[in-house]
Image (spheres, one colour):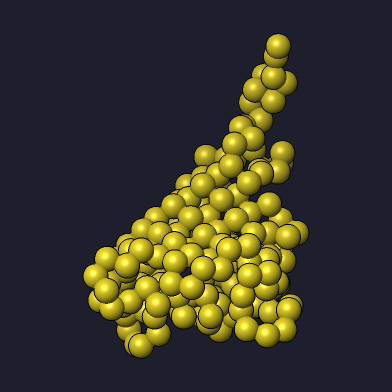
Length: 163
C-alpha cells in the first residue's frame, strides 16, 4: 500500500510536540495559583504573544472553563477558543483547543515541600495544515523554542514576586 502524502513529501501527520521543564523556587500550590487559578490574569504575562484573552464561562477557573485568545506569533495573528480539560490543583492544568487542534499542559511536581517545584510544560499541535507541511521542520523548531521560553518566563515571574 502506498502513502500519497509520503510520495508528495507533504510531511507527517504526527503531532508536533514541544516540551520543556525547569525548577521553580516556590511551592506547587503557589505555582498552581499563578498558572491555574490566575490563568486569565497571568497567561499574557508569561506568553507575550497573547494580545487578547477572555474568559467565556463565568466563575472561578476550573475544569470545563472556556476561553478565547488572540495571539500574534512571528507576525501571524490567530484567534482560538480553548477549554480546560484537566484541572488538578497543585498538580496539572491542561488546555485543549476547541477551534484549533492543540493541547498544552502545565505539570507540577513538588521537589522540596514549600521550596521548589519542577514545572514541565508541553505544547502539542495535534494536526499540521497541509499548506504548512513543507515547513514542518520550522514549525517543530518554533514550538520547541516556544516551550523553552514559556517555562523560563513562568520561572522568572513566579520567583520575582509572591504568586
